[in-house]
Image 1 (cartoon, rainbow, N blue to C red):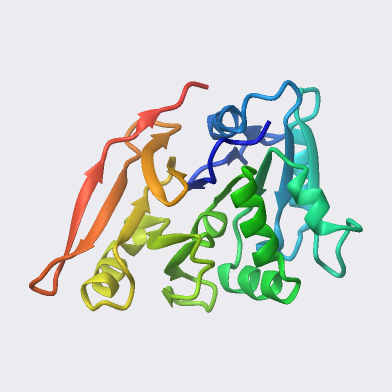
Image 2 (cartoon, rainbow, N blue to C red):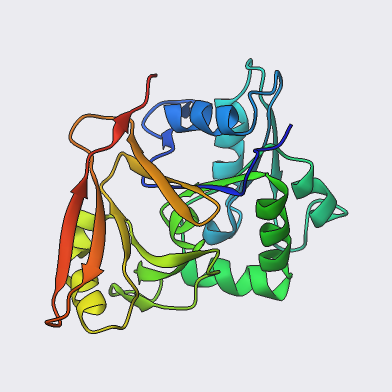
Length: 238
């Protein structure tokens, strides 16, 4: 049973990668709940931003070994690993997009028309989520180090009509300046350990997997400055 509305979880959290195998954070339980709490949730891992690094794919499968989750992955390098990408993704409960290069992810997705498939999945109730680049991609734009130094990228998928800032502690000044100058639209930001839940294009709540992690609303002011408002997240149970 899919989510009852288009759903996105844009997060600065996901797996505890210090563990071997990786430990899925509570954001995944939340994602499966939003997908209707299937008995055996189907979760597809998309790691285009790392060039489909095999080690990350292996860690993903190991993270869900001996659980009720039915994991799969979509690789695009050097060619797709599934015969019908659209059919495979529409059959999922959750699609989780990994960290990596946002610019490369968007370019490769567009070549394969995965941007269109992802929009169809979103509208069909497949829960879309991701960490870092996998959080930024759904938005209008944000700040990225895909080109080396952190800079503005304003051609995201635009499922969500906001800007987004991950790694916000390191990007606060730059991101606020971009909004103040009108180079990015108003939007949201997350500390490490926080995430944003959107139903359709409406922000519903912030969530976190650790104490001290916060989310933020960033808004351009009439005087040409940008205002930051803290959003206290709901702590997810492990």
